[in-house]
Image (cartoon, rainbow, N blue to C red; front, side, top):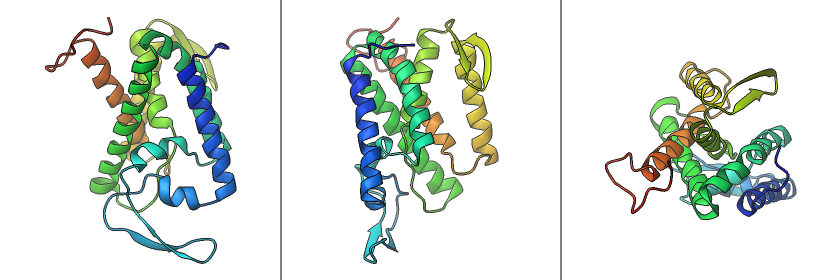
Length: 217
């Protein structure tokens, strides 16, 4: 378990906790403006103070949503995963590439969620949480350290990281397709993994567009 967290991971933890505490103070104000809302026409709603507000997609929401959380459990699970995996990936990638990786994952997760809501599920509800970026970190860990042993908290059976990550992705896909566990953005999680996979493969020189130099083995 890491105790000496590198700077980007530590600052991401602080930022997520700080924004969540601000949510508790400001009520729905942050949710209205900075959660990820479906694209399309705005909807009108009545705020807690009785005022009328216009709610809808804004471009900055593809980033800001990932620093907000729906409750203490949501926050703690995501921050525990960031704490466990973020430092190791940051040391491997370096601070600059790590923060790029983290934000690519959360943005692709947001785009995946917007697409699924727009063309498949419908509805008008906010998405929030760092889970898309966290799933990107899990993907990176599974690819970079495939034979490291990991285990679920509720299933204490050690398994190689590649199997853990592959199994988790399949579970997310099945739950997303079947609509299991409503209220969880399964396709945002998968979108975060997809964003991470594309960036890692680019850094490895595996895509048609090549980097100036290979950054990963």
